[in-house]
Length: 377
Image 1: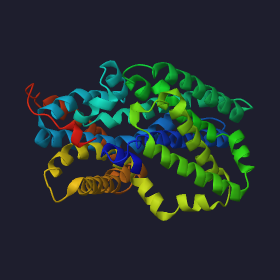
Image 2: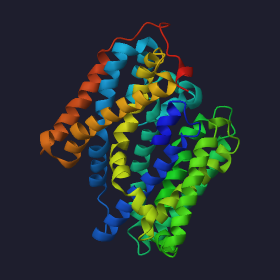
Image 3: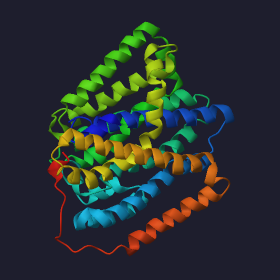
Image 4: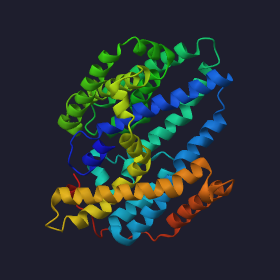
């Protein structure tokens, strides 16, 4: 998340690779939950799984969409508002990535005028959550559930790699970068790391060797985030994304499967865990905050570029903390104002409010006002 924050502020060229690490981690966590449920109960309750995903992810997303639409209407200017209204239905359908691909809206040069541009990755996540649990639910019924799931994840990751290499030769690499099929490699490598065969393999690594490997991989990832220059990197779509995700999967496997490592104690300490708990809402908020706030802060000479970036990050963190405490946690854990059915009713009403807001906000006049993209990259 830190890498993504710095990338979108124009401070870390390869910080977009933080999204790939997130994909790997997501695939690992979701597959671990699914396989654990299959082992404990003999089956996977898909409806319950999907409902938990809705409770976990939708409340914060709806909150951000409502607030961002209002803020863009008030302060964003006609261009930002027009594109926000255009993208909102696709955000609601969790398919904004395919909207951008279909409309040929380039990720690398077209996101600076779209407050919901970063939600392409959330769309990929949701699409993965719909398809992969179905596959695991079927595969987990057999006697060799874990090896079968591992084989499917590995094979799927390789197919995704081939698609990335093929599609990545285009002049505009948005299709390769935002397609669910091409980004599935990272998610499936994470899923592979969650299976019993990989767990057994990781546990063979001695603790000291695991610590050294974790340090080496973490340093390699940091170097990749520093030196990778976006779509200009010649190896990015020729296996670079895949190798980055593979390294992330090995790192996660070592941290979680090798007992007693110092690296795991550091990664699982209080500060990283606390910031990690904010990561979802922070991701949702940071890009709209950047687009709406950074152009205004750039006019304050004494702040400088880094001062403006720090303020924008601080505002994003504050919004994330408020969203987590006031929206995410109450609905997720059915506490506070969201006890019983009130949480589900409130989320449904908020979704309705977002739809009404989208339908009633007037379409801006064409040709008025723009945002300086170069100030953000």
